[in-house]
Amino acid sequence: MNSPISPLSPTLASTTAKFRNRVPTQLRRVITIYITCACVLLIILNIDLVPSIPNTSGVFKRNTTPRKALDSKSLRNFPRKIWQTWKIDPFSFEERDSTTAKTWTTKNPGFRYEVLTDSNDMNYVEEHFGPSGFDREDIVELYRSVNATIIKADLLRYLIMYAEGGVYADIDVEALRPVHKFIPERYDASEVDMVLGVEVDQPQFKDHKILGKKSQSFCQWTFMAKPRLPVMLKLVENIKDWLIGIAKKQNVPIGEVVLDFDEVISGTGPSAFTAAVLEEMNKRGGGASITWNDFHDLDESKIVSGILVLDVEAFAAGQGHSDSGNHNARGALVKHHYHASNWPSRHPRFSHPVYGEVERCNWNADCVNKWDDDVEAFGLLPPEEQQKRIEEKRAQDSQIVLNMNSQLELRELNPAPVSR
Image (cartoon, rainbow, N blue to C red; front, side):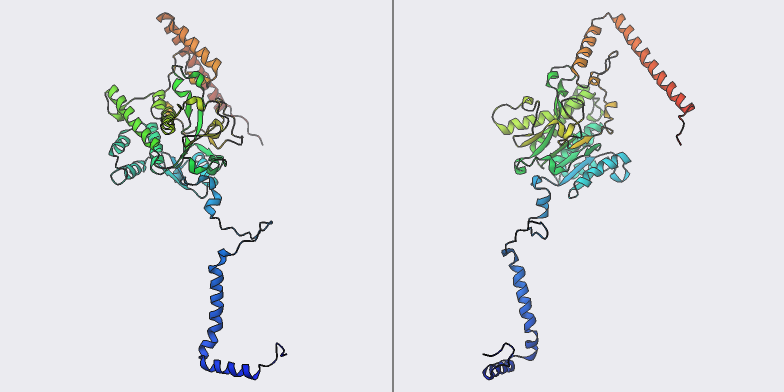
């Protein structure tokens, strides 16, 4: 037997010599390279046919699942966009607004983040709802006609959500958790079109003359939606009809209507938002009537007609009412700081000349009942006595203001010593 390193046999040597004489010298030199490249190509093309070997350590574990699916499996079919609106662009934000806004980008690095401002909002509406978009010139004209800042802000969030969808959050809302936490793992996101949270859950006041319309509402300072949901467009159309009616009643153009706090809440704010959502749920459901009773004392989230409703703690923690819990809770997803909520100064609440605003009770039943009793008793007094009480209240308020100013002057004259 020949050794592996023994010379070739005469027959084999002869055959090899004939082969060498028939193959060009240059081809013989590169044929090895060709064969090597072909082998490598075959390995690459067929690599997915080779099963990955389990690796308990997790090191060098092969995984062909797309990164997007790994990062946000629960957000399947929801646009990865975060929207906010404000007077100015992010480069000009005050520090508090910038700090709050950054929480959204930090916790959601794979999302597009955009702020619509007083300078570009009209262009956005014209682009998406004008002739080259949804061709709704009536909506474009409505937005152009409105002058009240809060009305435009409400309209704009609904228009954005209809046109593009994603997450909307007021500028003073801080993200506590990533957006993918908005949908609990037990749900299939493909069956969810919209994610809402309860804001106010005080149905015992539903018949109150002032608090009634505000006592049962979903939160609209933060919510998530897929694009083209009919409920968003229906909400805008409801607002349009409502504003036209108000303008006719006041005999002024839409841009000159005067609205108080409660009219804003019920016309474009949370009350209007809630009414439209409940109507949509009933339209989709086609069965038993869906009312606020289905969401009262909500302990766990639930899907109703494709709309996921989270408990009050999710988007409205720390309110001091509606059993909203606090922001340290696991279920708290956002934190509303309210520092941008100064619009009530232009749309005041009802304030009794002696007993002030009932909203100061913050839904405390004892406080609300006392306010109601005091106001009712006041109404039974003779006009002269009513006027006397009003003047006394004004004098008390003036004295309080004088005392506060005096304290400020004293602090300026005698500043506190600086500790060394």
